Amino acid sequence: MWKSRFAALLAGVGLVASVAVVPMAQAAVTVGDSVELPEIQFLDGRKLPKGHFNGKPVIIAYWASWCPYCGRQNPYVQKLWEQSQGKGLEILTVSIDRVEGDAVGYVEKYDYTFPVAMETEALREVLGKRKVIPNIFVIKADGRIAEVIPGEMFEEDVLDLIKYTSGPVKAN
Image (cartoon, rainbow, N blue to C red; front, side, top):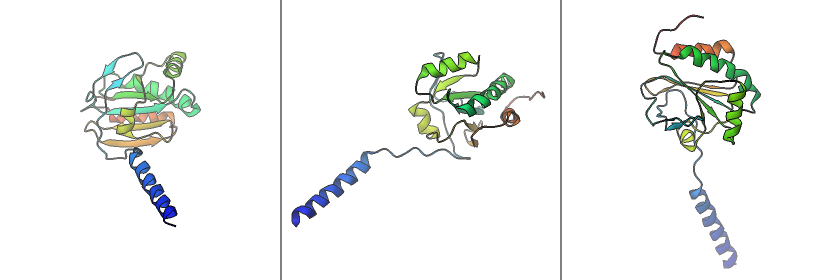
């Protein structure tokens, strides 16, 4: 009898110990949260230090080369990137592809010029784990999340994100 109780006690202790060493899942950020982006390394090898985006509005668009919804939305992100040049709005796209070469091939195939980084553990720690793609985060210049937009967006809605620019907006 005492052996079965001892075995149950050991099993319970083992369960508690195993739960204690499993890291907590990263919770996704929500509107109003303050964030600071980590160091970013782009596919072309350029690096931006932690804090580079401080004081600047940033649009972060998550995508994957195999995602058909991303394939429809990324041309609009490219347009937004082109329209935002010189206006104080930063655009960062993040591929969640497991193989960097897949992201590189995709960007080259479609001649995208927007900046692309691969998802990293550091980005997941700041923004949380993706549960849907495409997924767009809007960070205001004060570092607070202004919008979290899961799923595919229409062209006019993506292009409307230019409203977060800190410079003059040119009408199309």
